Image (tube, rainbow, N blue to C red; front, side, top):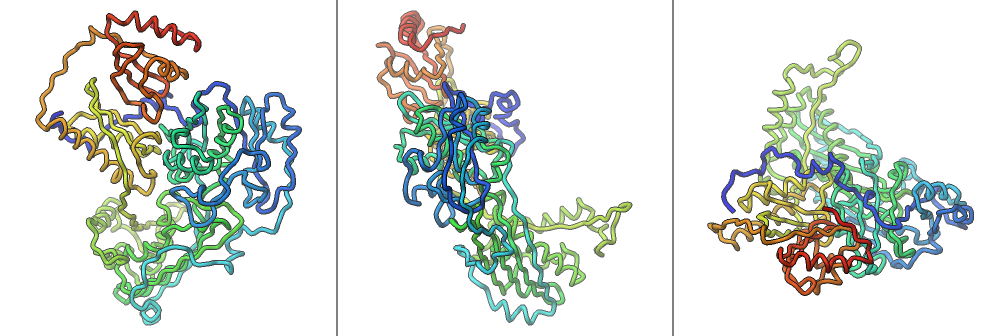
Length: 623
């Protein structure tokens, strides 16, 4: 370990890039398993009602169809609400897939058809006959506003006397805005592959932003011990909120694997990607009062959003109006309307992407009323402190952003009159808006180990939804350890790794990155800051044997007394132990790949032992 130029903040090719562009990166629906069954979800086309009966005869008569699961024949699940609440759950009663005969929303999963191929499962699913007794429903926010109730949100306290200040303001703007539903639909659809291990434990590859959140959910819902379920997500093909909560395909896949004792894969169709969480529809009312110079005297922001009937989904919609600009008289309100729909879900910049639309549009309206440039109005009301908490910002470069943006955009050439600029028959609009987001941090942990091969191996259970977690953690670890990035290997996406929070809210680097940095600094201190070491090639006296395949762990269990269970021997670990009554180093290099480093003079002995021990698994030799 030595001092090298810092790599953090410098351009670096994505360390996971080669695996992705060459097809080596496996996503949740791409892991192979012996005798794998494919599940196809059959969904409700009724928004509210009760299932009176399910006729599975035609589906089960299709050759290759193994089973049809529904609420009447599923395996045991937790009976009350608490076990279904995950780390990102909203207040209320979480949705419980295939729990009973109630239909709560259109698109709700009512059955899972399992077959030897996906095509068979989907075809058989089309043959199911589900009799639903429909009930009156409501899915339109505008038609149910009279049912709105206060959201269970901790809004900032009102400041000053908004109503008096607003009525007395020389310039007043009152405007209403609405935002539509936005659905998650990343490149990788939500999928879960559940592989039943020889010891009965479950290895789950899930599309998730939190492997430990999914693991805890499965433990509670199905009563599984921690060492009987492991969740992995080495690569995630986009998420930005859709993977924060365990989606229903995960519970269905595990349900089927437990019932049939077979490995199972469930992949949602593109149509079914519209049947779970989304950014909710909102109605917003803004009231801005200002003096003739443009100084904000009063600011009121009310928002009404939709939610499901079983959970009160709450996000930060109106709070930003108390932070972005200086104003001494503030009133905020946030209400929810329960509908016969699924619960909304966090989506990129949750809440802020909605509330700031209303605020910034109203500020533009105020600028027109004042005859003032939009940037000038915002500069004039710049806030040095967070008004919601009356605390100064640790850093804020918004004024510099205004100036640089205006310069680059050529703002001085803008004609402020509406509909005054055009290009041919097309009208041109020049606008701008400001934004704000929280700086958050969560508990996280990481492990760092300097291996005999000179590589620094660092691990944490965080995920990478495409934002570059692999790369930035590699850079942080390299800088903290005083090593080059190419000497670092970062592992993530495994519930067996050190604890990490959900990857969301833009706090992964501040949280996991801090843990990675501290682990590497402590490792460096343990080795000695000025430690000198030499690397001597002794490989001539050793032989490397690589073992791969689904049954390697069973072979190892027959040959060594060391505990090779995933919870004790994760990928990246290496130990010196007794193997076949002789000393060797055992390294876990990949999910189904292991290495034995043995003395060259014992190589033939180990080879004969491996031949005998692996005979029942069908030994294949590759030079």
